[in-house]
Image 1: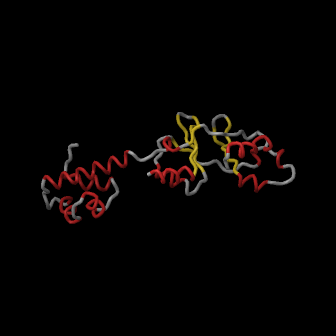
Image 2: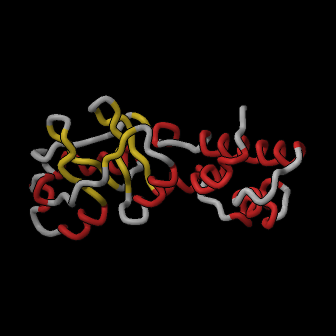
Image 3: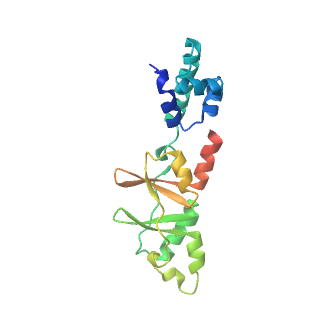
Length: 184
């Protein structure tokens, strides 16, 4: 890696680190980082190497962040809006799931969840169509969406659908996210 020490401030800011955070990671003082960034100090070769190694490590960490394609469940089970509830209810217990995307002609229309089912239970419920019970569609992201973005979306949604090449490729739930955190 060819490293230009005059670019330290720009690189550090791209990595979203304060001078203190970067200094700790590089094993140098915060005042040295400040002096280098303001061109008041020309560091020795050994300090430049420490800085270069810290940047390489941080850049590698960012490159290895998981993406949607790395944590999704492949093979999405989906249903159509015109299906009767009596036909789709067994899918929940058979597959051990709590929500199923509603998809027609490749387009995500909504979500059928256990919560929606309980909310709509009444006489004749099993004769209703999925479209009468389904909730709003969950977020759909690309396979390259970052772990950080997935975590942010899951704060507001119970699941995320992953799309690749115009097709549903997978699903990510909060439980999947927690499993990934345990593996880090």
